[in-house]
Image 1 (spheres, rainbow, N blue to C red):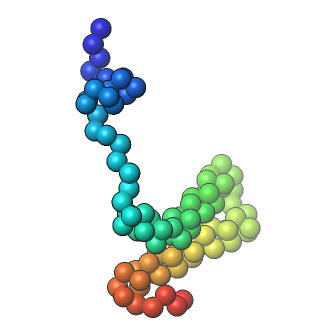
Image 2: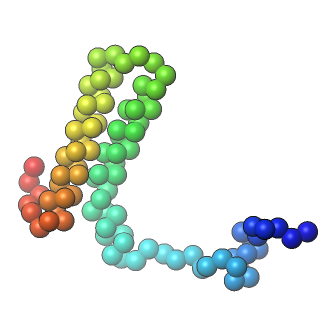
Image 3: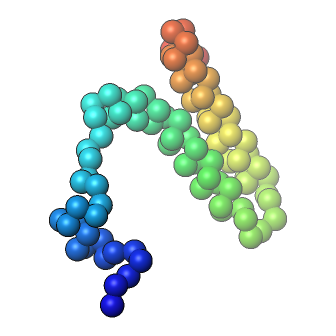
Length: 89
């Protein structure tokens, strides 16, 4: 029986799938530069998930605001760095 989507275990060596490509040094550097923003966004997402199924308490509101402010600060630093500005907050 032939499948429309080949089994990945057999397709890699057969030329059906492209070879696995590792990220370049430039891509790894870009990821490292964006890591504070990525971590801040993960923290915000964690805070949002934590309050999905319950009413917000005062502590929940503070946690969400703090996480959102960290995302904004990380975005600002990243934008300033990309524009050639300083990294000072």
